[in-house]
Length: 115
Length: 112
Image (cartoon, rainbow over all chains, first blue to last red; front, side):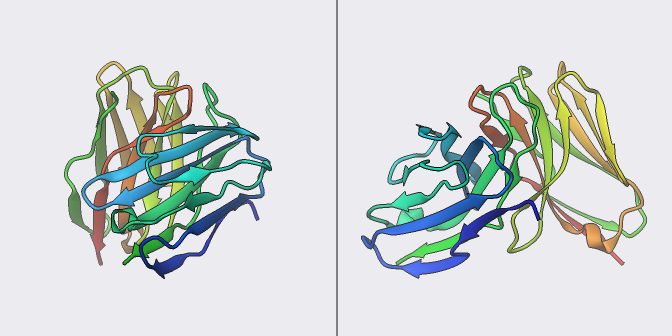
């Protein structure tokens, strides 16, 4: 089944303890991105990747890192999490970026609580 | 900067009603517009994607239209059912980086 898989789905942790949220897609998609969803603010893009080894900042990149060493994986890294990073996170992918009219597919989300 | 608005924030209708969900965007230079459904505690499910050159797309009881010049898209749901209850989000793709700019969504409740 074609899907975007995120892990973990839920995580409660403490300030400053490094964590990684994994994202994997099995559709051979070139484009991947991360969003966070907050009440009243909606979904905002954190980082995106046009292809392997190519990543760039979205609208709210502060406090996050990403890497794209393989086509299928795009982990989101919080080096020193803070309470303002408590949010619902989504990973998305699509076949290609730019002028492509390929739909973007989203994972089921990761709910992070930073205490 | 692209801004996407969905009004109202919530809608409650009786089962069987045909309904229209509205989405407006400020920058008409979009590549495409995508409609999603989000169920509580779940991810986003893609419903329809309309390319900038298209006027509408249909999938089952759903029909999405796009009017770039006026900065509007609508999602038409025919013969609504309680199972249609969810939050519906529209998202405009305007950048070479394929960033989606989302509206805040319309939470739909279909009463039996």
